[in-house]
Length: 65
Image (cartoon, rainbow, N blue to C red):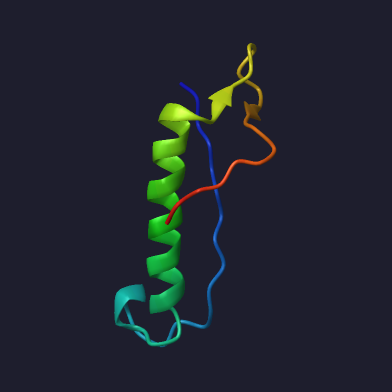
């Protein structure tokens, strides 16, 4: 099974849940939007190379979020 990980950064969390923290909430929402756009692109535009060790995409790839 192929696995692909993207790490996102945010801010100092001051509440139990990211969605409830004024510092982290905007970063959390943006990360969710980027993740959804990446999932769509992986199905359409981003492909694994032949030996499945790297991803390939056009240099001018733009994601709509």
